[in-house]
Structures are given as C-alpha cells and as structure tokens.
Image (cartoon, rainbow, N blue to C red; front, side, top):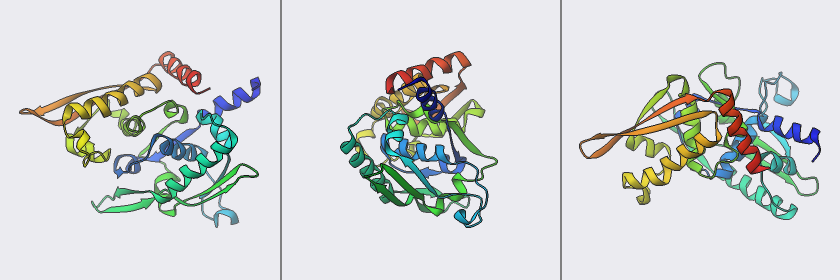
Length: 261
C-alpha cells in the first residue's frame, strides 16, 4: 500500500457515524461485533443528499454501494478473496433478517429492520444495500439530538457490548455522567433473559468491565462506572464520561490503526 492509499484509508476510517439519539438510547437489538461494524460502516457512507430522480426527489438516499476489498481494508478484516466474499454475504444476509425493538415517544415499541435488500456481485466485488425505509427518521437529516463519532473508534473492539455501550455513553457524553436502572440496562443490551448474566458479578465481569476497558483503550472517551445498591442488590449503574484530550485521542487512534492494519 502506497502513501496515498494509506492516507485515503485513514481518512475513510474517520468518516462520521451519525444516528439519532432515539435510535441509540431507545432501541434493543442483538448484533455481533461484525454486524455492528457493518452497520457503522454503512452509516459512515451517508452524506447529505440533494433531491433527485434517483432519490425520488426526497433529501435522502437509501441505496449505497461499496467494494468488498475496500470495506475489508477500512474495517481491518483479513481474509482471502473467496472467504471474504462468502463471509460478507453471510453477514449481510444475517442483517437483512434481523430486527430491533424501538421505543417511540409515546411508549409504544415497534419492530424496525436494518436492511431492505442486498445485492452482491462476486465478479466485480461490489455490494449494494438498501436501508429499510423505517430507518429514515433515525439516520437522515438529523439537526439535533443525534450521536456522532468517527468510525475508527469501534474498529478494534472485540466485544459486541463495547460498541453498544460506547454508542450509548457517547449520546450522553455532554452530561458527564448518566445513571441507568440495572435491569433496564441489561434489557437494553439484550442480556436480561440470559441466565449467564443473572449474577451481578458475572454481568460486571463479562459485559461491563470488558466494554469499559475497550472504550478507554480505543475511543475518544474515558469512562468508569459504579454500581449503586439498594440493600444487597445492585439497583443502578452510574457511568462517568469525559472526552479525551487531543494527545490521548491520538494515542488511542494509533493503537487502532496498528492493530487493524
């Protein structure tokens, strides 16, 4: 890879991922690390659009194309051609079939899909996806109450909960701290029905601690948390959030680029 290609790679890894706060804070879904990374990658391609015949004269674009090899380079995925093609096709098929629960302002919960359609051309290596139309209010023309971060922040994470918790905390970063009901937090992360996390120590060891470690290591945030008990039972989790200074952000981003190169 020459210097120009390296510069382009770093530039695209810093494209912004933007989602409405409602999508970040009021949704429940269970996606793997790779699936969340693909969604973030797709979101990083979304740019303001001018009404045109292609967008049916509305100011957003639902269909996006990307090259499998470029996607792999940007996201730090290492695989030979055939395996990369099949792996990408499998991931996108899984995303097409998955839904989330989204809580509306009136308290109603509605199911929302991620992708409406996927096209994959093995000969050209080009993927085309169409976002579900239900995603429009949460990804397009966002002028307030939105969460934004550089794609790079999540590319080296290994825990699916690290990405989810990072997005949630990023949406509350301006507050410096945020407190969640313990059971509600488990519900947001979709581990509330998993007996492996029934004990608070297991939830701490397998979900919260790895997430906090990866957020502090790789992202633009520094976070910590404390359990708040009522009697002997954990009732709430309070997170403390601060933005890293430029030098610490540079160190974190250097770690990511070094790990996924």
